[in-house]
Length: 282
View 1 (tube, rainbow, N blue to C red):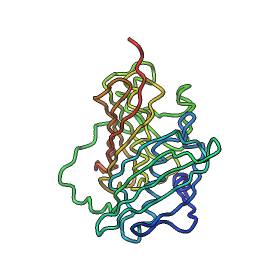
View 2 (view 1 turned 60 degrees about the vertical axis):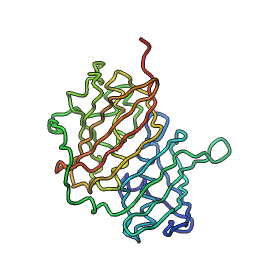
View 3 (view 1 turned 90 degrees about the horizontal axis):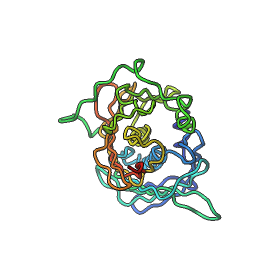
View 4 (view 1 turned 90 degrees about the vertical axis):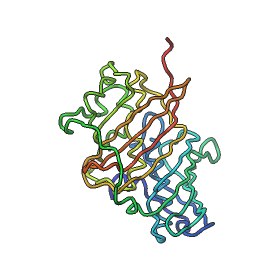
């Protein structure tokens, strides 16, 4: 079992939820190796939730999250996560279900994430009729590796021990205190343990890079408030390319768009999130 598969594994109290109106409770353990600073990465939590939903609906051929919306209610900590699943509807081509991720804290249950998803078969995304091409990046070996040793800020991102990230040098100025302020970050990414990308990884991949706010000269705090994502294809083996962009910052809120392409140049996932941001005073 790979590190990602281990983080997504759920031990169910009485089996996963499989039918309309059914509910189930299970437990997963997401270790500190998936943290950014003091909190677990939101992408790994979304991947956990969508994987849990798909496990119960796989018997209907609906194991893949085609679209989902996640609201982040509080910062999750490394450790045990309770997974509460409710199947809302089972249809012929799509099923709809929700997951609530809960941890025990402060003497009681605290909900961390609530996710609503429509699941089906990602094969229905073929053929591709219209889709944007990936950005033109230098090869991974010509890009800048993001490691925990690269900066004091990166040192606190334990997730970098599990994810191989190579940042396009043209969007990596933030790493040396020279952000472009265009609001763009592009990078290659893959799992360090050799695990090939699949649909289960995509909800993690859209939120696995550093926040695009870094390229605006705002390193650090950028919590996701809500994220909506879509799976647009089954990724081929090899590197993924991720591009983060923003064209909207209002008050202390930022809209971040993410797009992920596979090694063949196919767009396989997209997302848009509303995140918090703290711009420096003028």
